[in-house]
Length: 75
Length: 75
Length: 147
Length: 147
Image 1 (tube, rainbow over the protein chains, first blue to last red):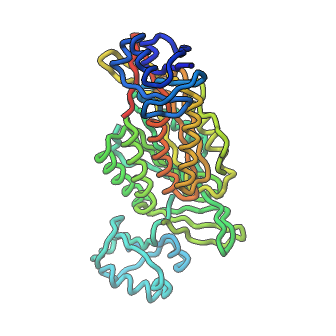
Image 2 (cartoon, helix red, strand yellow):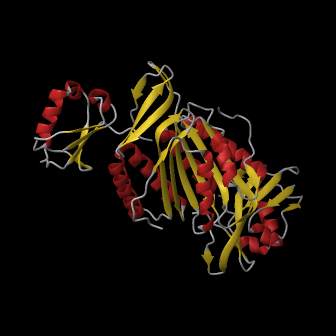
Image 3 (tube, chains in turn orange, blue, cyan, brown):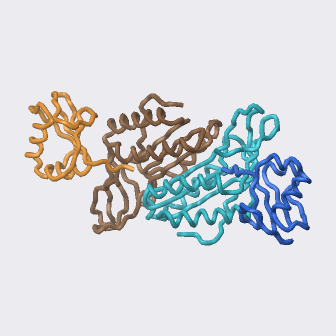
């Protein structure tokens, strides 16, 4: 699946997107990302799957797009 | 004293201002104007003396300016 | 930036988009401003039973209006954290589709700018001695009422 | 005038007073409009402990932002009697003193225009996936926070 990083998360991951496979839900994806980028644990972010915000653990398919987004600060 | 008419009051008086003397308060002035322009009795207006809105009968001096103003409709 | 002198707010005829742009552009040097709240009143071609409105002719009791505006302005600067406030109101004829009122409030933060602008528009409508006479296409006239 | 298609709101760099004037001028033909409520966001040269802000760089998750904006727009047209609504948000670098957000709501009556514009600004600040990175004079950066 395609993972998108925004805002200050890019400072941590040093990339705007990344392809990952093998995770089947957002909880395991988060665990995987936290292992890869430990600093992610100390920042606040929301998750959107295919452009929709999610609040709870959500199943993922291989062609899903998952966005990690810090609090919005437009305007 | 100098009497100023605004808005639809001008349609009644056919003038924007008029010099009057001999009245010593706003109540007698109103009575005088209503006699001269009977249609004034059927319209709503506020009174300002020297640019200040008044609510009650107010004494008048010869050099005062009295404005008769219908409800405001700017903007 | 608080203005303590009585400023004129009246302009002859309609207010052009170009004048609004110039007013906005002048604020680029005020780099502590974060928010501008603007209100524009545009003359409507209302369809009345007496006919369609083609223009509004505005008159005022100018001395009193400017003094009243000064007090409104001072009270809003007192109540809100504002950077600046500009008001332009047309006198004379303004054709339908054109702008007769331009209210422009700027502040560091949006909440003060928006709240002050909203209050200012209400104050202008109900506290300024200004009158609008709607001129219909058939040349009849109807005195405007504010709601 | 309700727009049912997804419109782009993003522009490269700052929004000029001239563009705002052109947008206003285009409404002169809509003679049922009586009120325009406009909000402009201007980049502040904030003095932070880390240094003075000289610009903000905006990024977005565009697909999601435009879909979100579409829903916000539809909800406001549902709730208020509006004639039209335009939103322009900058992407990329906007220097201090320049405009990064232009929100423009028009209606027959002022109350609908003002209330919808106020709600719209809040929605843009808190519901659109857009991020601002403040670039300081010393080239350090600080991620912007909305309040």
